[in-house]
Image (cartoon, rainbow, N blue to C red):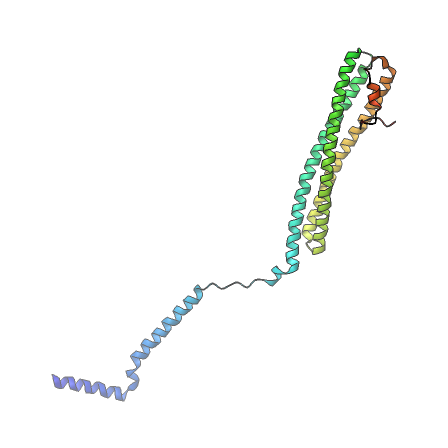
Length: 237
């Protein structure tokens, strides 16, 4: 038994001496396998590391930033213009209604002259005076809003020009189209109010002529009130 063991060890020793490549084969295999596994692991680790995306320098240029800013400005001024336009149109509409109400009262008053006693004339005239005050109040309101609208309009025009100068053509075109739209809307309502004012002037003239022909039925001070310069709706003739 011992002799067999010595013989086996001698054979192995002889093989290692005769074929030294076999002696390191196992160690080389293990070493190569470890290196492959380490390489794969290192590659996975690299894949897990986030790579920062290279930013496009064009998107951060001064021109691009200016275009972006001017687009925001045109949007803001367009919003302001829309709000002031809506408010002005509403105020002009209310003013026009008040003017037509006053026109109707003047016509009724003129038609009733000579058919009423002084007390009835005085009562109706007080209603006319109240309507005139209402017209004046609404006129002042629409003039105040018109001033704000004009400011918003100038800002929008300046923003549209800035957009054009900076190369933001789409923003410039959009802003200018919006400006033209609101201008046409306001002009349309203005024409209606001007038409109402013309009707008012005609009614006042008619009332004055009839009142001068029937002075006896007028309440005290009516003719004087119609000729004072304090009334913004007096006849200019």
